Image 1 (cartoon, rainbow, N blue to C red):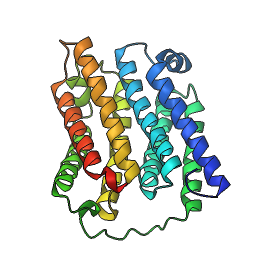
Image 2: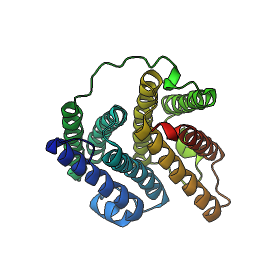
Image 3: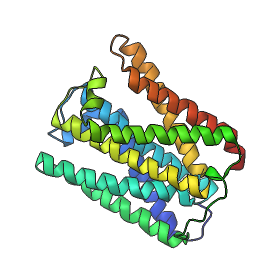
Length: 264
């Protein structure tokens, strides 16, 4: 498992995967459990929307750990996972400050998760220097390079949009209600986008990471599937800009995955 004989790494990665899996499945499939545990959560479509979003992010990280369980540890996973967990740890702490600290379970879970990933990263012995791959993203395929450049532009645009207009995302999605909890959720999504940007920069310099490209393809498929379901469930309440970004991300992720999967 993970193509390593280090038992501590195996235990740490198993526990990290378990945490990602539990949070992912609960957030996506058991809204009531999360709403009951956090009194500040309102039982409405806005809460469900953001819980589903964060749940998908957790589940995709679990998929990454499963991938490495068969393929072996990949430095690229940690280049994304450690920043995203640390940023979410900050976000959870801010949530507690905002809500008055109604439940510390999430904070403790993210602290443990951070420790598990950092321990695994250190014990894996990956170098902390990142030599250039020679070509952008370590490939000569121009379509892959152009697609990933567009992906970076989309992520940068999403991050910049939050700082220019924090409430813009909520206004663009008709079913979402503007409230402090929803606005804070958008900050959490922005922090995830920052971690994604870090992962893109890492791959631009070092080369494509099999686990990151696979995770991206899985995430893009999940969000695109959700978009299709939402378009049928709420045909008169569309969010054109969000739909455009999700569709473009799906096209980019799937194209890059299939054009490069033989190298993973």
